[in-house]
Every structure is written in C-alpha cells, then in structure tokens.
Image 1 (cartoon, chains in turn brown, yellow):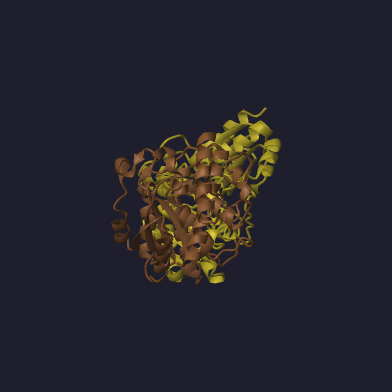
Image 2 (cartoon, one colour; image 1 turned 90 degrees about the vertical axis):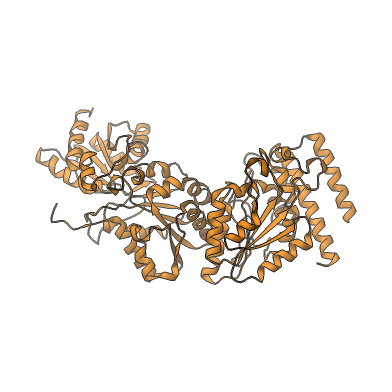
Length: 279
Length: 315
C-alpha cells in the first residue's frame, strides 16, 4: 500500500470512528467498543477493496458483506454513509423510532446493507449462502463477513465453517475481530473460543493472523485470500476493543454502552485531533 | 376408502421439485441429511449439481438458504417439520422472515402420522410457531395433487413459504384440474347446517365425515384450508354467517394451528361457536400411523361427532 492510499484510508477510518461515536451518542445506546475495533477493516473494504457503487447499491455483480457481528452496525452504517450510500447526518438517527438505521443491520431499508443480521452465528451462514450462490451460478463477486470473537462461541459459526470448508468456497473471506473482550468479561474468562486459527484450519480453511489495525496487513491478507482457489479464508484480526477512543480501549464496559455528553466531548476531541494530524 | 389411491404428500414434494427442475434452473434444493425421507432425493438423483446437502445442521441450512435467496435466487430448504420449524425457528425468524426472503421451507414428517419414530419426531407445533412470524406464508396441502400444485406456486411466491408435508400415504382427493391458489380456501361440499374447515390429511377425513353426517340428515359444508396464513377470512366469515357453527380439523396441536387462526379471526368479527379437532396439548407416541390417528381421535367419525356437538351450540 502506498503512502497516499494509506493516508486516505486512515482518514476514512477516522471518519468512520467519528460517525460511530456520533451515532451511538445520539442513540443513547449501542455498541461502540466492537464497532471501533473494526473501523480500519471497514475503511479498507468500503473505500478501497469492494466493488460497490453508492449510486447503485443493489447492482448484481457487487461484492457483498455480511456483518455477522451485527451489533457493530454503527461501524457499517458509518462506513456506508461516509462512502456516500446515504447522508452522514443520518447517522444521528441511529436507533431512533421510525428511523431506517435500526439497532442491527436491516437490508430491507438501508442502502448498502447486503444482509440483515444481529443474531450471532447466523451472519456467517448467510455469507456462506451468498458465496454458494456465486459459485453455483458462476458469478465472480466475493463475499466478506465479519465475526466477533465471542460470536465464535455460537455453534452455528462452526456449522457454517464446516460447510464452507467442505464445499471449498474460496470466494468467501471471514474476518474475526479478536479483541478478546465480550459482554461478561474477557473471552478467556467467559468461554474461550481460542485457538481460532487452529479451529478454522481444522475446518478446512486457509487462515491468516494479522494486526487488525494495520491497513497494510489487512490489505495483504485480503489479497492473499483471493489467490487461494480451493478454500475459504479466515483472517483473524488481533484488535483493541474501543480502538481510537482512549478511555474506551480494552474496556469491556464499553461493549454496549453509549457515551454521555462529557465522555462524548472527550471522544470527539480525540478523534478530531487524530483526523487533523492525518490531514 | 380402500379403493382410493393413496400417496404421501412428501412424495409430491420430491416429484414437484423434479418437475420444476425440468422447467427451470434458477433454483437449488437443500437438505439436512434427510433426502431419502423428505423425498428431495428424487431431485438429487435428477439434478445432482443443483442439490446441496448441509448435513445435520438445520439452523445453518436455513441461514445459508437466506443468504442464497438474498442474491436474488430461489431455494428450497428441506427437513422434518420438527427440525425446520422447531430447531431452526430462530434462523427462520431472523435470517429468512425479518428480511422477507424468497425461501421455501419444505417441512416433511409433520404431525403424529410420522408414526413409529414417536414424540421427538412428531411435530404438532409447527403451524403455531410459524404463524407468529410476520409475512410467513404457511401451506398444508391435503393430498398429492394439491401438494404438487402448491410447490409450483410457492417457487414464484414473493416472500418466505413454509410448506407442511406428511410421511403417511393419504387418499388422493383432487383431480388434476383442481385449482390451487395460495391464500384461498376451497369449498368442497355445499351445506348450511355446520361447516367443517379441514387442512392436510384431515381433508379426506372431513369428506368422509360429510357422508356420515348426511346419513343422519345433516348437511355439512366442507372447506379445505390449505393455506393457513394468510387465512382466507372471506370464506371463513361466509361460513360463519351462513352455517352458524364451525369445526376445525387438523393434525396439529389445537394450540396455535388452524383452529386458533379461525377462532382468532371469528371472535373479533363474527363470534361463532368454533370447536377444534386436533392434538390436545399432548405429545405423540410411537405406533403405526393409522393406529395413532385412531387413538388421537383424528378420524371422520370424530369430526362427525364434533360437528353434531357444534350443532347444539348454534344460536
């Protein structure tokens, strides 16, 4: 990745983070921690990698993304809004009564959302179904899905992994946001899904482990996945929950809690400073 | 009815899929390691490259079907009613129902007529469960002919469809010129004394009950209600107004099924006595299917008795 692109994507990630904080603050509810941890991935996918068109969100040959960890909807919405699928100001309607921006992704009403999701474990299966459709009908688009680490405690994740491995769905890439924190504590304390790399390998997947906040590593792993022709790829991203907002980082208390006005002001100041430094 | 041809509606499911496979190639069929039993095996044999086995993971299959449908393609997802509506309820609700995707769920082995496998496999709750999902269409065909036509209608339907088929060979009551339409009940026998609204294998029993009642001078109206959701409220309301008493008959729990749907509608529009014949809040058991239908009171004579009881309740 050259310096110009890295800078552009870093700026996009910063704007995505700002949109997450704005939306969750306005909603007075939501999941900032696990949204912030995937902001860099969403910047890379929505601002560089994916074949998508904000003017034609349902175009048939588009790449698809299923946010299996649907509670990170603020990250998806912010990426879509900043990419031009709908106005950035609409992020302030997140979770408001009558708004399109539902607490979890709703494909029926939100431009750019490829699949409704939110019930953990189901999104990866839906992504598998999309990848199966593409393979079956000879379509060339790719399917991406983003899983939580705690989500990997759901048995359905492994049912989906088994099927995708068995059917050799090489057009599927699953990212796991491994920030090691879930609602009740650290994943290790609750019911560790680790080792995720060995598990996915055992289910017939190509596995790559990266720093999920390093855009170069995100790109390299994503492109490497495209070269594998007989297996789906799992990219285990080591991340920091709450990344980019100092007081939210590595705090499981910020999994599903909105910042109050004071915390919001601090978060905005930090993110604006990061953006200014990049620009 | 010994001289009547009998075929299971699950056989119609398999046969209709093969017919559709010959007509179009824009859909796939999925199963969860029950292809021989659900009869999707017929499709698998004819079109192996269009058949996908998910293995024993019904929830996963439903979500995969949802993702497949989200790409604009059609898909049938098949299992036993217990493991489709039961085990995979939440996947059907959230992955398929909420986004209103075009998935046809082919659920075989519904009701107690599963027979020897017993209570764990005899799903008498599926209609009730599926009825709670907004936008879900539920079809419970009466016989082979109707089942084939229903499958062919379902593939063109906008939104999810839950189709309920049986394991037991049941009488073929309709000719090939029978007209099936999703959401439409069909009056099979005219009558103004009492109405019997039946669904699934109880339709053949209801037609027999019609004859039994006729011998006693009672003219029953017989309605086949293959589509339970959306309910054909027009035909129900007309029956309530014209006959003043209703019996529902289904191989399903009296909680949540056809009887509930009819009662819920009528108590708010035209309060009418509705007696519900079905499985009375109990689990099934092992035994030959026909013996179980006798034991659980799901026969023509039971319908006729209930119809006479309903007559006494008329205002």
